[in-house]
Length: 234
Image (cartoon, rainbow, N blue to C red; front, side, top):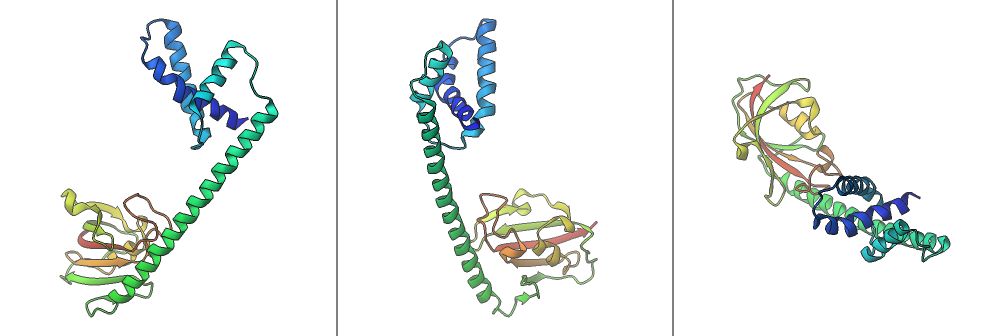
């Protein structure tokens, strides 16, 4: 039942909206009909979930129903077609998930290789968690934060290939946040710093976003690198 409503939404969205938009909506009947149709389609379109639908057939089904005509297909035929379409969609989703999982595995393997090489550099320190860092500049006379503190920092975040995904430096404005509310690599790393220090962190995926990603600019399973300047412990 839900799927058939979704098909109807697709028909309204794909078939009717374009023609209605070409008309002038002057009468109360036109305005009400357009509003009801648009809202109905907006709510129900989500239920199609990307199904590959035939627009002409969708519109024909709606027109037949609204004119009181008999259905051109038996309910058995409709149910069989819906099931076949669902199975195709599920197969496509499974294939996409497999591809995504494969890409995550590749990203993690590349990250592990990078971190293994990076750890051999004399200027890099590796903590027990696997976090890597190097001291770019140090003051040794400021306050150090705890995990419960709020800090004000400047940072520049990149992927292994140098792609910038986020940067307060580029925006020209420092940011404040509680250390308890960020990724584990940040929570651990910034506590190693004192006010005025500037460190570079190499954060393994498991201390960042793991197999998920909060943004299309950060591939899942990625090592993240941050240059961080601790301006103030709040």
